[in-house]
Structures are given as C-alpha cells and as structure tokens.
Image (cartoon, rainbow over all chains, first blue to last red; front, side, top):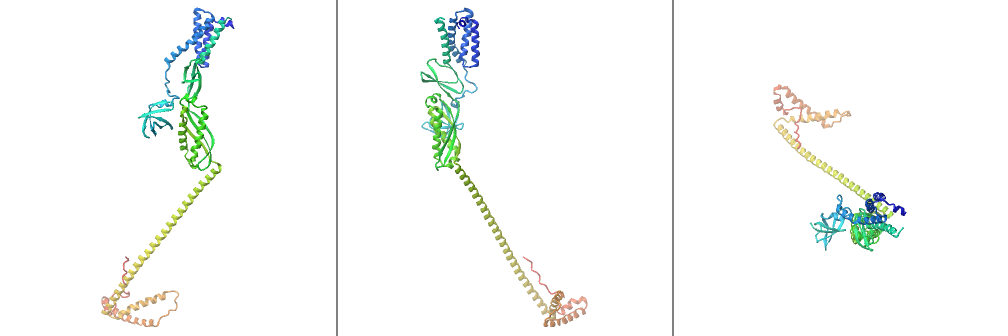
Length: 148
Length: 334
C-alpha cells in the first residue's frame, strides 16, 4: 500500500486526475471534477520539482480546497440566466408586469384575480371588481398589484 | 509508515468529504433548504450551490413542480340526507420551499385531509340534485377555501376537481324511473294536446261547412223567391196582355189556349208506356168540343190568302204566334 503512495510519480497523478474527470462525467456531482483538476496540477508540479509523496498529497488537498473559491468566481462570472425559460418553476415571478381583471374587489387590501383558470389572491390598494390591475411584485404565491 | 504519512492520507480523505458536503447540485424543479446547526437559513435554487461544510446541512428537498394528489373516496351526506361517495384530485404547487418544509409536517396528508373535510362541508350544504349538477361550483368553492387555508404553508392549490359522485344504487334507479316518468308524462301531454287541437280543427271545419251550406240555402231561397216573384209578375203581365188582347179581339181565341194545353197533356198521357186505358173526366169531353172552335178559327185563317193570314187571325181573336201560348220570360238570376 505504502509502496503505491511512495511510487506515486508524475504519471500516476496525471492518470488519477484523468480518471477522476472521467468519473465525474459518469456520475455528475461536480466535486470529482475539482479533485481531478487538483491531481492534474499536482502531476504537473511533480514534473518540475519531484517533491515527496506526502507533500504531493498535501498539495493535492490544498489545490482541491483552493479550487472551490476559484471555481466559484468563474461560475459567477459565467453564470448566464437561463435563456429559454427564465421563469421555470417560478410561475408567480413570470406574472409580474402582466395585467388582469379583478374577479373580486380588493377590500382591505385583499382580492382575487383569475389567471389560467385558477384563482390567485392578490394584495394591493382597494379597487372594485372588474377593474384592471397590474402585478408589480410576486413573493412566493403572494401577488402584489397596482391599478393599471 | 510515519505519523505524517497517515496524517497526509487522512487529510486527503477529509478534503474529499468536505468538498462532497460543501458542493451541492440542485436539479431543476427542486429547491433545497439549508439548515445551519439545525436552523433554517436559506434555500438553494436549481444549479450548482456551495454551502459551508460543517456548519450547513441540507434540510429538505422540496419538489417545486405542480403535483397532483388523489383525494380518496369518502362518503358525504347531502343536505337532503342522501349518502353519496365522492373522490377527487387536487393540484398544488409549492411556492415557498421553506414554509412548505417547516410550517407543516406531512404536507400531502395535510392537503388531503383539508380537502376532504371541505368537500364534506361544501357538499353537505347542497341537495343531491345540486351536488350532481353543480360540480363546477363545488370545485370553485373548494378551490377558494383550500387555497386560502394552505397559503401559510407556502403553497398554492391551483385546482380541485371532484372526479366521481356516486349516489347509492337504489337512488340511481329511482332517479332513472323519475326521468322516465317525466318523459312519459311529457309525451302523454303532447299527445293529448295534439288530439285536442285536431278535434278543435275538425269541429271548426264542420261548423264552417254548415254555415256555408246554410248560407247557400239562404241565398238560393232568396233567389228562388225572387224568381217566383218575377215569374208571378210575368204571369200577371202575360195574363194582362192576354186579357187585353181578348178584350180587343175574339173571345174564341181563349179556346185556342185551352185546347192547346189540353192536347199537350193528352199527348203526354198517351206517351207513357204503362197507360193503356185513359180515363178522361166527363168535362174533358166537353173540352173536346172546343176543337170545333179551333176548326172555325183555322177555317177563317186558311180560307184567306197567306199574306193576310196574320190580320185574319187577329180578326178571328187569335194571337199572332199561333200554336204556342205566350211564355213568361225567365227573370235573370241575380
């Protein structure tokens, strides 16, 4: 066992790194990808300096941890909002800006609007039934309206 | 193997587990809640997320897609005491993962129970007929009540549908009979109305025809009377003319008419096939004597020249058109 670690050379790290990345493809969870990246990096360093195997393992651990904030920055920079369906699973948010007719009057701040054959309760300034309202804010299933 | 060797290996393992617990990929359609030391702190939305290892833990994984749950069958007693079996479906969607996770325990069971009790209260306030025919209204009322009730749980109930309403079998049978009786009744009424209508029409037709007949008779009677009047007038005039002619001429001309008519009547008697014996009144024999008078007239007439025959006839008291009595003109029918 210890032989294997001791003999961990440049190529072993590179092979290890590639294998981890391949595993990531088979079982997506992202974190194996980072480990693979770290292993590849350790392999490259060991090419140049050939440190002891313990140091190599510690470097591997260090790189794996360090990958997280680096990746996070990259991910944030490249995180594009979903283009096709920005309101997938966020139905209420998709209603903001649209206008509807009040089904029941808003009394004491609460009324109902019929949208897509179901009834939504809305909050907003008092208005009689049948008046047009615009949805200005959606918080969970709570819609806030203003007179359109 | 030195302690450092083991430490290095353990450290790598720790790093691997740490990464595993810190990096979270949330699939689309789900929201995960994050608990720091057991207390809810935030919600992870779909995509790659990082939580602080050792501090944070994933709490609940909430399905944010619209879901359907079956409302199990239950017996409901309507306002008019009929027991019907009802089941349904409810569609809901979680809008707030945190509330759905922590404000209610056993979310599905809560929705089912809430819906079932509301079905009972809504249908219990209606008659059986209303329950069977106002499904939309039931759905609507259920939706409003249940949706308001689940609001604190971060949900929205989008739809509640009553699937089946099954009245007891004997009631169904009675309803069937009632419907049949209703139809039979309507058919009978329609038939009776038809008969009534046709009888009325027939009677009216008869009445009309009788009226028309009577009117026809009346008109014809009027016309007959008029004809008779006209005939009488003509007769009177003819008589007057004859008597005038007589007063101016020969009385013997009178005999001519009598004889003429007599012979015609006699000829008719003779023509009838079953008359072999002809009874003549005694006076008839006397009438025959007037033939001699005719002979005298004829002698007087034909004895003269034909050119002055008319004048001779007039002298002898005869009428110009010998042989035919003056026929009164038929009055024109009006």
